[in-house]
Image 1 (tube, rainbow, N blue to C red):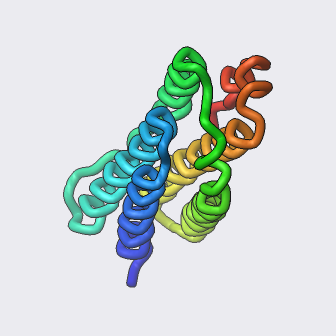
Image 2: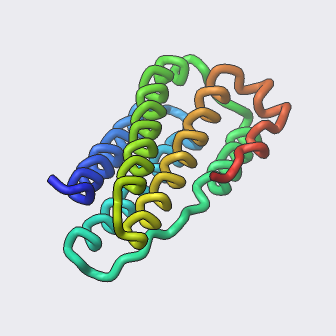
Length: 162
């Protein structure tokens, strides 16, 4: 299995995982975040598939953190977050964070091993994307852990771009 076949499998697994988390989440804003992450995994899969099939493809950087900021604002405007169900999800969020960390580490490693500059560039683009996902999940965990304080401090505006 080459790097792009493996990447396609990782992205498919990521999409399925995020869709499952979204189904189990009662908060509409968090559902949007996880469905957005799932949609991004589909875009990644399709890009890797094109590369694997030797079709023209370009890795495009997303604006997932900007989208998430808007969703956090929507959650705040809607009155916050009901913690009764979301705290049960933290294990799934932590698992998702670990998967994103493994993904960006994998892409960085494969980029360093590649002899093709084009392949290096594509893999590093995806590494940055997965780092954005990791940062977003970190913010979701902090948000679920202390929603009122987190929203009042407006920490969601400090989500850094990678």
